[in-house]
Image 1 (tube, rainbow, N blue to C red):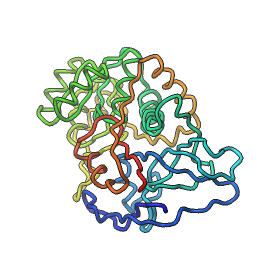
Image 2 (image 1 turned 180 degrees about the horizontal axis):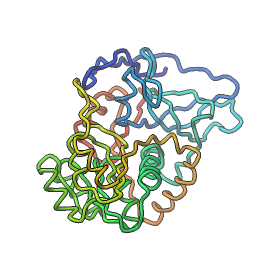
Image 3 (image 1 turned 60 degrees about the horizontal axis):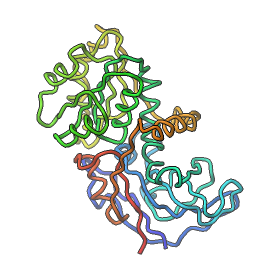
Image 4 (image 1 turned 180 degrees about the vertical axis):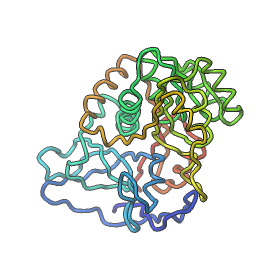
Length: 333
């Protein structure tokens, strides 16, 4: 049987447990050109909150009555697809369920002998690709840049900061709590850290970035974005990757008040969606895999067990009770 998490409500504010229902259905059969994956790990990402909202976006919302969208990785257990054989491992958009059918168009083979499977939905998956293209392509990173990244201890931000260090930049991360700040500096090698939970953001950014900011990679939005805009340098680049501080707002989204700093500094603020770069994912994956093999890029996964525990694990995205990539291990009875 196949346990599936089904979206049944469109939440207002923070999703409650009854936003979804857990169903047990038959394992699906496959047709010619398809293959069946027994899923081992499911990716939990802030973008999931936006996918539940019935509003115009870069991707259609998850429909009511549909399996909750999620990236995943697992083992091929049946195949009528020439490119995937039983015993292969594959990653794709399998959703929050134990078994998923793929047709090969949005999935790719992975090798668990090279890195652990969760890495393929983290550093070598969507979050890692977001970091790579966001900082290098959208952020137009240059050696010597002064880089500030919000959500610096998270799945995307931790990779952004490490790539910037590899490229010879001065990197400061923003995160919540002394443990995460210590993690960014001591484990990830950031030059500075700011604790948004205990510090005045304007003063802390001025302290850690006294010469200003060339690139701000934003995963948080709200007050942190406003404070960063006050310290940007001439021709700075602001990458809008996410705004997790605003996703569960019941009222209007809070936009930047300090946007005129873009005019004064002839700076740019640009949004990014990682699917725009999908044709180059393989090349980026090779580069990041090389950095990992060389010990220059660290990958951290925060793994929790059980599809039944999806909601409790999902909440960690917004409470900050995690470091690195949040992953749910799918367990069978």
